[in-house]
Length: 111
Image 1 (tube, rainbow, N blue to C red):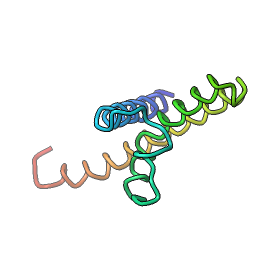
Image 2 (image 1 turned 180 degrees about the vertical axis):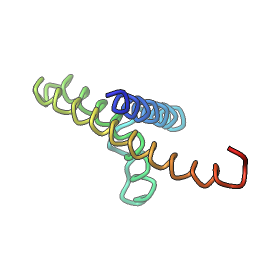
Image 3 (image 1 turned 135 degrees about the vertical axis):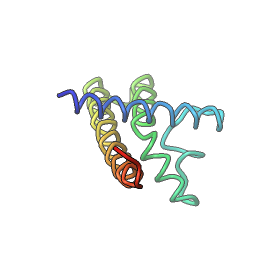
C-alpha cells in the first residue's frame, strides 16, 4: 500500500508542478483548450496533457459544475479519473527514474 501511495504522491506532485508552471508561463488557468492543447502542436499538447492532465481535468470539471453543466456524480467521477491518472503518471515516472538510475549506478563506481 505504501508503494501505491508513493506513486500517487509522485504523480500528484509532478502534475501540480507542471500545471502551476504552465499557468505561470501562459497566464491562464490550465484546461483542455488553447494554448495548452492545440491541433497545430500535437507533440506539445500530448506532453502537456500527460503531465498536467489530472489538473486540467479537475479544473474543467469544476468549471462545468459551477455552470451546472454536469452533476455531482459526474464531478466525483472526474475526480476519481484524475486520481487514477495521477497514480498512473507516478508509476510511469518512477519506472523511468529507475531505468535511468540503473545505468548511472553501474558506471564503475563502488557500491
